Image (cartoon, rainbow, N blue to C red; front, side, top):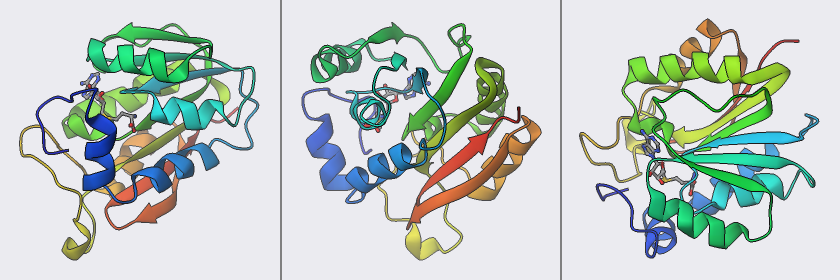
Amino acid sequence: MSQFGFDSATYLDLMRAEVPAYGRLQEAVADATEGVHVTSVLDLGTGTGETLAAVLGRHGGAVAVGIDKNEAMLDAARERLGALPVEFVVAQLSDPLPAGPFDLVVSALAVHHLEGSDKAALFARVAEALRPGGRFVLGDVVIPRNPADAVTPLVGGHDRPSTLADQLGWLAEAGFAAAAVWAERDLVVVRADRPD
Ligand SMILES: C[S@@+](CC[C@H](N)C(=O)[O-])C[C@H]1O[C@@H](n2cnc3c(N)ncnc32)[C@H](O)[C@@H]1O
């Protein structure tokens, strides 16, 4: 993540080089979506579509909306995801979310670009976009408890990770029952359930 903005043509090679656990993170996000009946998915920070590919692979027949501020990344996602039923929306994560309710909201490696207060506000809007009993799965880089685990390359002013504890607190304030379900060094996956 050592670039300001992403180049859709080089994105995957960059991620695999800079984030060795990138593929395992995507699978862990998809794993964390299991157990919910999913017919609709909202993906925040879709990029080239790797997260949606993993998630939709677990939920055949589901339709999805993918949001990203970078139109070129969404063009690559459109190509990557082919015939899958995905609507692509060029938008900021601070914009109003698409009308739900969604069964599932996912996000990988995107929310850490927001300031802490904006993460908290986003989590509240995600809760509103989910149906009762729906789930939010967040996979992202965090400030680890052990500084030696801070292995993901970050750029100040572009990457703004928070601690896992802060994010679990903001998710609880938004009404979620949330817990980390996977971690590898400074990468975590959080499963956050909206109560029925
Ligand atoms: C590291 S990529 C992750 C893409 C995909 N989820 C994955 O795991 O490969 C982060 C994506 O989030 C998008 N993004 C970052 N900040 C954003 C914001 N404030 N609003 C909308 N999209 C944003 C970037 O354009 C980029 O495509």
